[in-house]
Amino acid sequence: MQIQRGRLIDHVQLVVRDLTASKRFYDAVMEAIGIPAGPAGKDYFSYDEMWISTADSQSAQGELTGRVHFAFAARDRATVDAFHRAAVAAGGRDNGKPGERPYHPGYYAAFVLDPDGNNIEVVHHGEAKYSAPSITITWGP
Image (cartoon, rainbow, N blue to C red; front, side, top):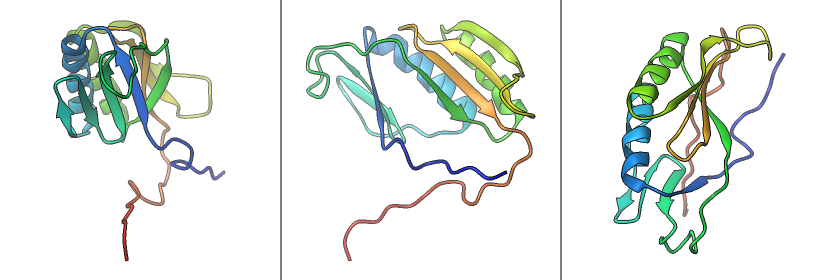
């Protein structure tokens, strides 16, 4: 079996009620799964192509995002476990302890609700071979 990943989503923006609570939560989550912080300002912060802002930010135009579900890839089961511990300790609410799920053989995931009620998942797809850990985009000649 072969699947393709990394072709659909360019970036994600969450517009949150409490930027401080969200930063505490996502800093813990991203540290647990090994994603470094990106650019930040007075009304936003980011990791890779995930942007989190207040409703006052220019891009949010005064509106909060609705409840969403998204999943981050984990390199192994231990990373899924570490995510769940860190996310709950940072103010998240358990929405599914680490364990195998019936989606396909080897699907091991955990779910935590962030401070705004978004369902955040971290998943390890079992023993699989990835063609690359990430892609590189270069502008110009």
